Length: 203
Image (cartoon, rainbow, N blue to C red; front, side):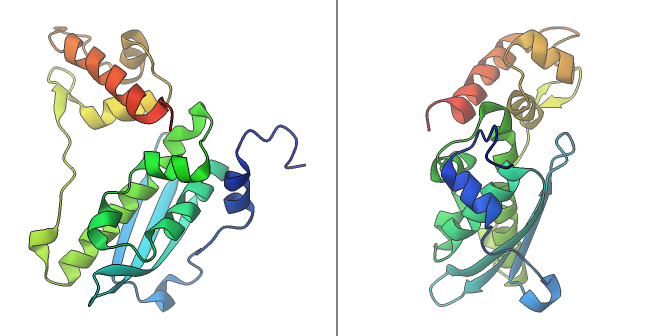
């Protein structure tokens, strides 16, 4: 039944059907770092927990629990495989594009399901730094307000593009950005193009 209409790569199918490193018992895992992200629009939620080998500064183990679709589950599974053995600094730089590439691509309407795992991993790394008293290494992902009138951030614009917005009108329908004074319209249009290239160009 799964084979009928399957629109994903064999790698996605493999990681969905046989996910690696699933977190079965969070209390028993004794994590050094924990990261949780969720997307209200699509309903996905991803938890990533890591153990760190302190002498080498690498991720000794990475487990996860995801509530979501096949793309979300496969994305977190492959991310956990990618992260193990990585230096913390390198793991922090893993992007959703890296995950998509490792999966052999995702259908365009499912790309948004792959952008949470890398954020959860970064949260887990920052959480480890916090617990270890290494606050100076913590990096913050900041949002910037692009539309002052409607308080719409660059993050919200990115999420709307991931949800399917391709034109200014479609973005306005979803976020109400640039619907008052219109002063930010030029920047918003540039951001639409930027995020389309970031997430939907050839991986």
